Picture 1 (cartoon, rainbow, N blue to C red):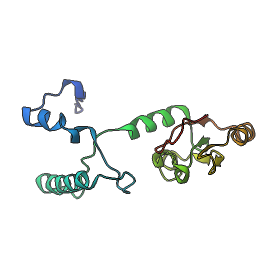
Picture 2 (tube, rainbow, N blue to C red; picture 1 turned 90 degrees about the horizontal axis):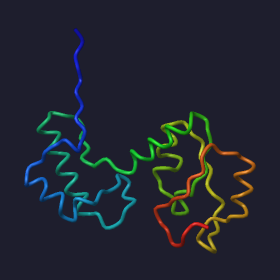
Picture 3 (cartoon, helix red, strand yellow; picture 1 turned 135 degrees about the horizontal axis):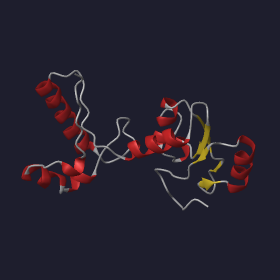
Length: 156
């Protein structure tokens, strides 16, 4: 007989009052990035580091990652569902304030996608729509992603 794996979804988990108290604090809605992309997270970084060291000890593990599920999972799900290896996507470059997780060394590299940055106007700090239209028509990407980590103005 084969083994059965039972997976419980998060909405069915019951947590202790201590965990609920911790998650209802401000820190319950924060997370950080390993490359220190987000600023002002020094204390959360320290808590994560100490927690990961403790988890490695408790479980005898070589690695541990305490970061919560986040937008990365949503990004991975969407990109994996609507693209295939070697497809092209257009998005805001990480150098222009785009989200690093959707740029070249993020999820697209894992899924073997080609990324093209929107033509970007440093003067206006925004996407150059005329040039972007030309790039989209010429390259015919599988997906065009409007989003960024640093929004100064709404994308046109």
